[in-house]
Image (cartoon, rainbow, N blue to C red; front, top):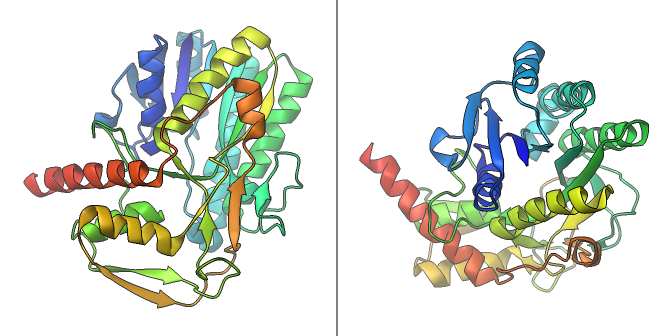
Length: 329
């Protein structure tokens, strides 16, 4: 298929582009390079542009007849969304509206949307099902929820088939360290811990040790980025063969505590970095895990890297390579 990948130079988008290329798809990446990198685009053509520029976006749609759009372009830092909400409603919600306007105008048949478990908010349940009520507690989650609503409404009104993928905690890197998470000022736990192990940070904080969990720290469902990427490629193929729309959780259905993750990073790196225990952050649920029975049933998706040690090792290997490259420049 001829596919447009927005945000395809970013962390998750670039891993999906790599797999789309391996599957033989014809790829155009559209990215403003605010958090993405040219070197991360390993397949297809990169067009540097911003979704807020409707004229530029229209040029891309009128030049190429896309069969599908995979939409990753978004801001994703939860605390920043609280202090700068309009940035998130602008980039995540309004720019999705711009994209949907072009999808409708040029009758693009398929859309895969990068959503988040943050749409569920702070539920009492620890394991999320797709049909649970959406009650996001921050502008990031709300901006994604609004995008989901626009997509489902457009799907109802037109022939658009969509797959909305709700990510849990994405981590790790390409197993050959070709690409990985290079976001500056990263906030993801495994990335931060790997930066500590490689000496880029002199220590890290654990936010809250009094949660109702096995060791008092939050439990999260960590999914390897290549398993997540695989779900996108399978979603495209499924829509083409079945012409149906779906909303699917992307996670392994089990979780690890913050302390457990840090222990594995320390063990595999052989580095005992400094960890400071501080008070809770606002809006962190005790535990958040995916019920993934729907994605397994609908797509036949099975993870290849459902092992915390594999995830952490790939992240550590990438971090070492990335920091060496940074130091040599």
